[in-house]
Each structure stands twice: as C-alpha cells, then as structure tokens.
Amino acid sequence: MNTLETFCTGTLTCFLIAASVCFSASVTTETKVEEAPQSLRFDALKSLGDPSLPGTLPTYFSPHYRAQALAEQRLLGGEVDYYRKELGIRMDLSLGVLDRTQWTKVTADYPYGMPNEDGHPYVILFPANLGDAREMMQAERDVDPAVVRAVKSRGSTWDSAAAKSFNMIGLHEVGHAILEAYGIVPGTRWLNEFLATYIAYAYVESRRPDLRWLWPVIQAGNQLDRPQKHVSLDDFESMYMALVTDDSGDNNYGWYQGQIFEQVKKVYQQHGLAFLKLVRAEFPADSQWFALGNQKTLEKLERISPGFIGWSRKLEANSRRK
Image (cartoon, helix red, strand yellow):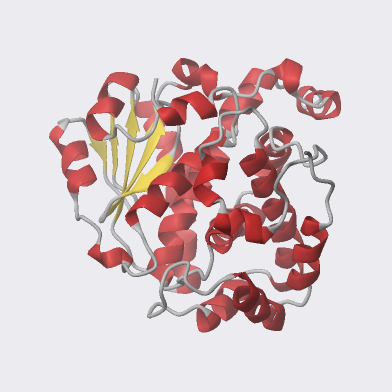
C-alpha cells in the first residue's frame, strides 16, 4: 500500500488530496505547465489496446466495461462541451475507464478508485469497477445521520450514493484541466482547488441539477464542524504537503476542501460563470504558478467579489485543536 492509499482509505476527500499532491509535484512556481513531461500517460493508456468510444472526450475502457465508460463519457464530456461553448476553450483531453489491473499499468501515483487528471495531453482516469474501490468510500456509520436519511429518502442506499459521488470528483478533475486550458494561473494552491471546484459546481448548476444531491455526500466526509489544528489559509499554503500527506485521521485537508466548497457556493450565487472571466483577467496565463501569496491573491479576489478577505478571517477564527 503506497502513501496515498494509507491516508486516503475510507474517505472521499482523498481524491482531491492525491490530485493536489501530484499536481504540486509537477508544477513549481518557476515552471510553466507546458514544460511538464509530455504524453507519457496518454502513451501508456493507448498501449493497453483497449476498445474506445469516439467523441468530444475520446474514451478508452477495459473490456466488459462499455456501459460504465459510456456513462462517464456522457457526464465528463458534457462538462467539456459546456465549457468549450461558454469559454471557448480548446484542449486535448482523453478519458480512461479502467479496471484495477489496467490502472496500475497507466499510473503508479494514484491508488485504484481515485479519479485523477494528469499529463499533457490531459488524461483523466476513472475506475471502471466501483465495487472494487469500496475502501475509498465513507462508511455509513461515520456519516451524519441526517445526511444518510436524506440519501435514503431518495430511495438510494448510502453505498450507492457514495459510489455515485465519485462522479463529482471526476468533474473536479476535469475542472483542473479546464482551468489550465482557459489560461488561469492561480496565485495560491487553495485558489487552484477553489477554481477546479467552482468549474465543477457551475456545470452541475447549469446543466446537471439532478446531481446536486451528491454534494452533501462529498461534504459528509469533510467534517466542517470538527476542530482542526490548522485553519488559516496561511497554514494551508505553508504546510501544504504536510496537510495532504497527514495520515493521522484528522482529515485537516478535507476540512479545508469543505470550507472551500462552501465559499464556492456563495460566490457562484453572486457571479455565476462570469466569475471565471474576471479571475482570468487578474490571474493571467503568463503568471507564475502559486507565486503570488495569500495577501495579494485575496486582494485581487476581493476586487472581483467582496467577501474573500472576510471569509479568510472567519476561517482563521475557527477553534483550533491542540
């Protein structure tokens, strides 16, 4: 079991954690994204010789998983199509829907079941067999009973809802690729996560409102009310790798992701998709990744959408666990 498997077992938040770990390793403040190693992941995916589905999002899938591949292509490809139309982006993106055996032939960085985006051209990996990735799901016994009741009131079991919520992580991962393709260079790591979630959230609100009920399933594992040792954005930036690789069970990084999601909802209600266009003007493609720092990043965002500085202060005022 690798490091990511160790600290990700049993929580949906791990998907966002691992994506951030690998993204951080490949992009420094001095390195442009386009300078990253090219096509290795895509070459590995193609070398499997799997059947494929043509379209806006070319999709390669392990034998016997055509139905799962088609469903994921429709969902994630729908997100790509939406932003191609709304933002005019162009990008080379493929999807691999793989079983456990083939997964390990394409990536050694992500444990099976963890949707992730990497490589240039971009390749999204998604598990073909969700039943084989149950260790990644939040156990019903560990979830707020009110959330479980809401899920069951829809005629769903908790395990079924947890499996379906993998799709929301897939949308977030596509969001990272769209963010790059649109030419936004986040000034901080937390803004990178904020924008990927914003892109996913905006798509669901605009085109897939039937999936809204899955956001609380994701949030259930983030435990927003739980006191954490680290609560400020300064902590998030300065202790980033320590937070994402912490296997203590505190899920401090998940707490941050949950807080980011709550702010995404508020900003989207005020600005909708126009927010992304305003952000691109403040964080253009010729900037350096994660080099701006929190103060300047917050000042820029405050000009776009007043309330970011107040949100930052509110986070810092949360009770800290000793």
